[in-house]
Image 1 (tube, rainbow, N blue to C red):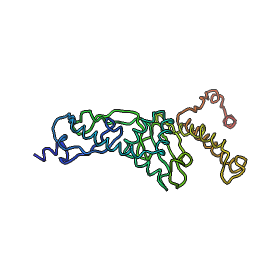
Image 2 (image 1 turned 180 degrees about the horizontal axis):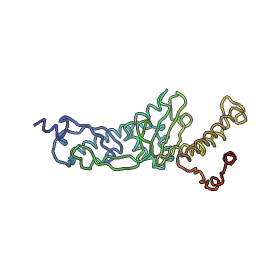
Image 3 (image 1 turned 180 degrees about the vertical axis):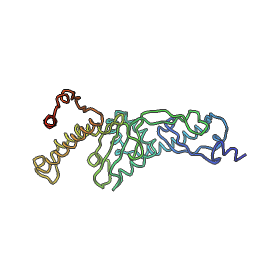
Length: 275
């Protein structure tokens, strides 16, 4: 009966599920026919016809996005590939397979997003050709993946590549190198404080100290306000390093044998002296 099927397979019309990298390289929301869920078997394998249909949907989506790639995207893809250590072809595949692909267009548009983040880290990938469990879920495995993120929903455990812009200009092929800043923030194994400390001390501070053009400040590094700013950044990095070492128990207090002091305390004046 219909109610019996509902208990076993859920909604008879459709069930939405996230299917992963075996077809797309990144999750894409697709609609599966209810017939593959309406059964009491503990292990269900997607039919060849269903797999072909899903692959067809994924291919259409990816090729549509691939057609949108221009010189601006290629510049960003090249920087990502160099920074993370992947091939440009792999980066392109990951990007056009990503559900958040539209964030790239929002970043490049006039008055667009001021930041665009990519995480490269271990994520659970669902296997399309794996057997479905009785609850309709898919078998998963941990794999490294490059994906677009807003930075607020996923735990950060690997490498963050970021693009920043400060103006509201439209980003074009001719100005992308000047208007967009690229950087890498390495927090392998989730060690964010160490990654931030390295980024500031080894990349940002040397870059700032070698900066010749400070805009309206004509004296540049000789200006007292610039010197105060650089001093503040140096001081912040020092504080950050101390905090990290405290958290990692790198600072240990020396053990002192106080027995010899206590044994010599005979009267109140000895206590005062010891204090």
